[in-house]
Figure 1 (cartoon, rainbow, N blue to C red):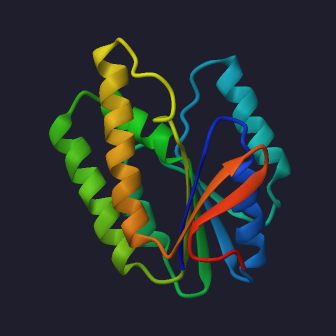
Figure 2: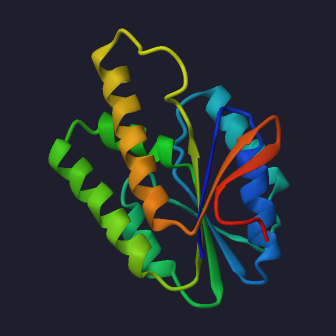
Length: 173
C-alpha cells in the first residue's frame, strides 16, 4: 500500500501518518528529511521525536531519499517519509537541477517497485497566492508536479485539515 498524505502546516498530517503506520502491524522505519538549521526547526524535530514510539527506527536523510527507500523497503516494514516538501526544499537548495530531477525520478521509480507499505507526508503549498519570488514559484510548481505524480502511484491519497482527513483516493483502514 502506498499512501500520500497532504495538508498545510500543523494540519495533523504527520499525526495521521504515524497512526496509520502504528496500525499497519509492521515494523516502522521513520525517514526524516528535515535538516537542523535553527532553534525553531530543532523544536519541531524534538516535537516529532517525542510523540513517536521509541522502538521505531529513525533514519535522517535530506537528499538521497530513493536510496534509503531501496535499502529499507521490505514486505514486513512500513516506511513513513516525513516530509517530501522539506526534501524538495533540500534538493532545490543544493542548486543542482540535474540531481534534483534524478532524485525525483528515482523516488517515483522506487515507489512503484518497493515492497511493503510506504506512507508519504507532504505539505500542500499550492492553495495560496502565487509568490513574487522566482525560487518560491519554482518550489510551488515542483511540489505540485511531484504531488500529482505521486498521487497516480499511490493507492491512497488524503488531504488533512484541522486534524480531519479527507480521502481523495482509496479508503481509510
